[in-house]
Length: 145
Image 1 (cartoon, one colour):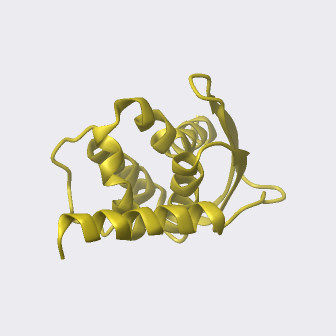
Image 2 (cartoon, one colour):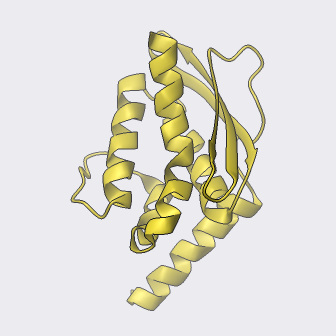
Image 3 (cartoon, one colour):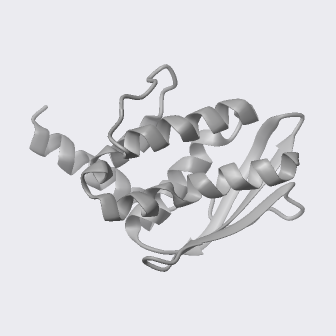
């Protein structure tokens, strides 16, 4: 597949998650609740996770922002559901490395999330893509404290 076709496919995946977000909403009585925003561009997220016995049973988000931040939140909630907390945090580290253009551990299949690789070429948009992931990290850290 040529680079242009792959780029088009990735854009389609991002727009699909933006227009048809997965896991939109909130979890009543979620064990992890966190709100974060990106003051640079106004992206805002409210993330709730149901964590039980070290497993992310459910993940939902609400908020507003650009297509990249909302698509990333949709992809992240899909990816971490059913995962052990440690795996979810490892995925976040892998995603962060990918966004920074670093070599990253490919032992975990990121699925649709790999569509966001191109964001690394636009440093101003990296914070948009990582907002939901940073919210998850912060929420889990605060919950474990």
